[in-house]
Amino acid sequence: MIPPTSRVKWPIYRAILVIGVLNFVVPQYNAQKCRLCVYGPDTIPDPDKVIADESSAPANTCGFMELTAPFVDEGSEFCLAIRATATRCGCNIPPNACHLCWDESPVTNPQKELQDYESIEYIPSSPAGLFFSCESLQSYLHTLDHNDPQKK
Image (cartoon, rainbow, N blue to C red; front, top):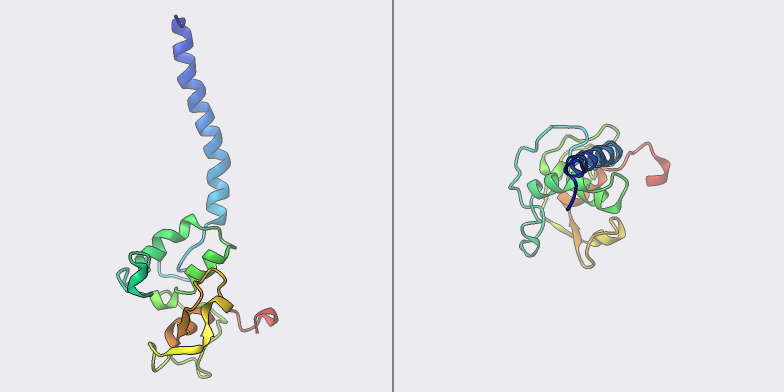
């Protein structure tokens, strides 16, 4: 039989262990989490907007990207893939972003598929055989800083 004092100490040790782990893990998690809308708004205007084909449902909506982002590391390929959908989902365009059109206007034929631009060449976590549309290429370009010589 376990003495009564042992029963009291174990929950205390467990609580101290949990608090210690949370103090170590939570600050690191918060410092490295990915965000869909880095430059705002705080919530996306249309979480139900479909941004991929129906075969990837429910992982094909802006809302899914917004919910998934905090569970992805900031510097990972998956974070890049999530952010490549940002402006398609209504996020603000980052300052110094690259644009598809020279005058920075929105694309005129957003759904047109660009057979010369397979997304896996630019976003390694993309499935093979998936090509950019004008809208998706524009959104990907918005993740690039036009002042960064490494990304030209």
